[in-house]
Length: 265
Image 1 (cartoon, one colour):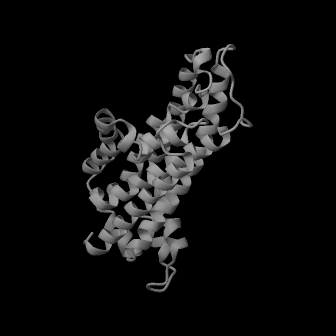
Image 2 (cartoon, helix red, strand yellow; image 1 turned 180 degrees about the horizontal axis):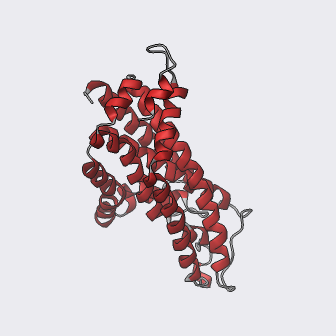
């Protein structure tokens, strides 16, 4: 483990967030799954965005007011959220399944601080990756558009906001994965819960009640609130949707920290 050298020069109990974050960063970057998962996110989102834009047709006159090419180019977020969310789960449950959590807690017994360090490091990494891939997908997708289709530009109303919030969305889903890993501790169960929250439950609710309830779930917020340059009827506004997601993350991490304090490793 890499945790002993990082903490060995400190008096007992004299560690802080920076020390815990450095430990988490070393562990995160040393895992092959981290690189491959993030690479899959980048490649997958760009590929889906390019293919979607290449197959986008010019809107009819009746639909020109609601046509949103930005929403099309960001279609790959549906895949990216799954990969990043699962990676977030594994960041926590991988240590429990291997037993490495005992060494981690020996180095940082303060469990809320440990969870905060995991969330901070992973959140920052996925935020950077999310923003890079959102903008890269946008520019690559623009090139794939047919000449007859209106080509969006960064200066158009709502475009820059949609890209920034879509990139941030991936980081928020990654933090939800971190929280689920801390709460459930079992990899398969935590991933199953994540898939249910992201895909199954909103799809069922959408079929039963339309968007009335489903619009409050992460995937629906991403598709109809964040990744749009034009408002979608009956859905949350972009900033309202982003605020709801932040509340979800805060509540999930709070629950994870609370449970970590009250359960043995």
